[in-house]
Amino acid sequence: MNPLAFQFTVILRLGVKSLMLHKLRSALTMLGIIFGVCSVISMLAIGEGASYEAQEAIKKLGSANIILRSVKPPDDVRQAGMGRGSALDYGLTYLDGARIQTTIPGVSRVLPVRIIRENVRFGKNSFPCQVLGTLPFYTEIVGLELARGRFLGETDERKSENVCVLTVGLAQRLFPYQDPLEQSVKIDAFYYRVVGLVRERSLPEQRTQAGKMEGEPLDNNVYMPISTSRARFGEVIIRRSAGSMEIEKVELHQITVQMQDTLAVETADPQIKALLGRFHSKADYETIVPLQLLRQAEQTKRIFNIVLGSIAAISLLVGGIGIMNIMLATVTERTREIGVRRALGATRNDITMQFLVETVVLSIGGGLVGVVVPLMVSQLTTMRTIVTVWSVLLAFFISGAVGIVFGLYPAKAAARLDPIDALRHE
Image 1: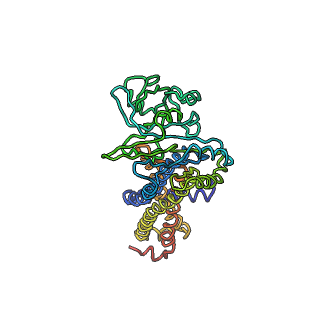
Image 2: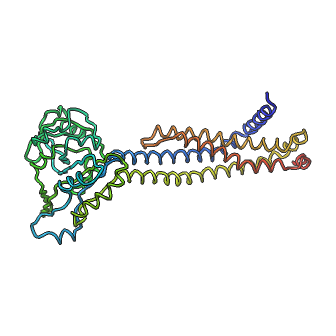
């Protein structure tokens, strides 16, 4: 065996043996490192999980999409522009979609959406829902998953057929004991044949500004051809509540502009805003760019990780101070042993290595336990956590570094002891 390797093996054996002589003290000393490593990995895992869910939600909106939504003007603008009994006319129009399609370079497709809040009925079952009038390629742009049946077709749109597609959750509530396909549901005064079921993303972003649905399930959408929606519901929406009546005229509640690639999104966003600004004198629409939201989420994730990592590092610092404190007490306790070893020919480097090995064994042992605990917690809890390899390696590396940094001073203090004074120590 290599002499250096043999010497290190002997020192390592001595260090472990010294620690095993005081098992409880060694275990308590390791607790600081265990909690520190657990904190680092757990906080990074929670941060990664939360960031992942936020980024996935944004990605589902489409990184190559620009989303335009109709927004009610402020109260003062509404009162100034409305006469008594007149309808509030605001929001996006079909003409806006046509202008964007023909004017803005790089546009692939423009998807109009009308959203009406109604009750959907089957037999005695009745539930509030959002009726989305849209085009057949809605699933391609938004990314809905077809569960059964089919989605809307070109023929449905052209002939304004009374057909609809339900989300799986809504279908389960409406048809608890029956197959919903080819059944007819009633919305307002008309019946619509169910031709398909889709799995909804259930994103909070799908709440409409007009007709909020707090406290109701998000998986409650009904999809029908936009031509059918326009013919059956019209463009004037009347809402009655507490003896008052509100009349609104909205052509489109949302327009999703799909660009050819993500590079075109950056240039198209200001162009679309400038185009709509020429034809909308009031603030009756908003623009959402998922690509920008995604970049902001990634930046937030980096800041979040730095903050959480800094907080967790305090736990490691406390653990390191605990190791230093115990090792300084150990040096005092083992002064006579140090004198004997020096008298038998051990060098200062040998003494330094012996105590340094003990601190590193303590910290790395605590690091190993600290790595295992968060992995178990992430499997047992319902919270989304992502334990990455780099976070485990980082925490393990830091625990070893803590052992070296905080163990170096006690080791040097032990090596500097005078052998004669050490032998006289009682």
